[in-house]
Image (cartoon, rainbow, N blue to C red; front, top):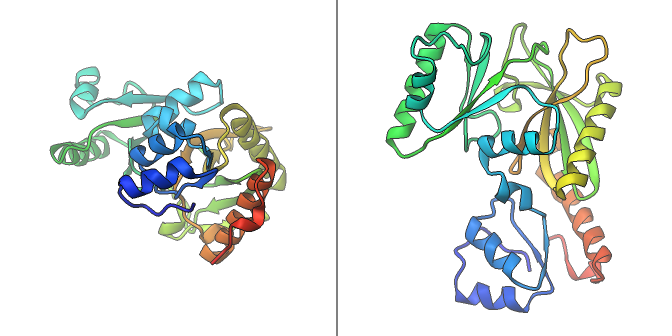
Length: 271
C-alpha cells in the first residue's frame, strides 16, 4: 500500500491489517503511524526517531541522548519561561549572536538571529504572537561561525547524498535554498565525506532511512568536524535535482527495502 495523507478511517484500517508492507507518506500523521506500527506489516520509512523525539526540542534531546556533536541548544516551553530566565534580555544563555528556532517549523522557517537585544526582543514578540494562536515551544542555539555554509546530507534508504547550501551574499547567517542559497555538490569534498559518516552514524543508532540532516563546520577550526543542526523529515527536493529525480531515488530505495524483507520489489510501480 502507498498511503496518501488522508484521515485514517475504517476502510484504511482494514487495509493496514491485511498489508504485508506499508509505505508511508512524508507528511505522516501520528494516528496513521500508530495504526501502521500496531499492525503486523513492515513499514517504510522508519519514523521511530521522528515520533519519539518530535520537533526541534525533541531533536536537541536526541542529539544529547545519542552523544552526537551539536551546538549548545536549549529548549523553552514559552516566551514567558525564557524571560523569567533572562529578564533583562542579555542573552545570558548564549553568546550573542545566537539562533532562535520555533519547535515545529521546517526548512529554515521560523528561525531568527538574535544579533543584539533589540533583535532578541523582536523575535520574542513574534513568538509571543504565535503563542496566542496556540503554537508554543522553541529552542535557542549557539550560532556557529561557518561563513553561511551548511552541509545537507539526505538519507534515502541506505543511500546518503550530500551537497552544500552556500550563501549568495556576504555575511548571510541563515542559508536556505528558498532564500536563494547556492547549491554546490562539489565544494569541500573532504568535509562532505565527514558529513556522510556522521549521517550514517545517526542511521545506525536510530534506523532513520528517509530524512535530510543539516550540519555546520566551525570555520575557525583547523580540522573541523560536523555539528548536527537539525533533522528535516519533510524536505525540499531542488538539491536532489527536482521532484522527479527524488521519486526515482525513493523508488529505488523502496525496491531495495522490499527485497530485504522478502517481498517482490516489482509489486510496487512508479507512476
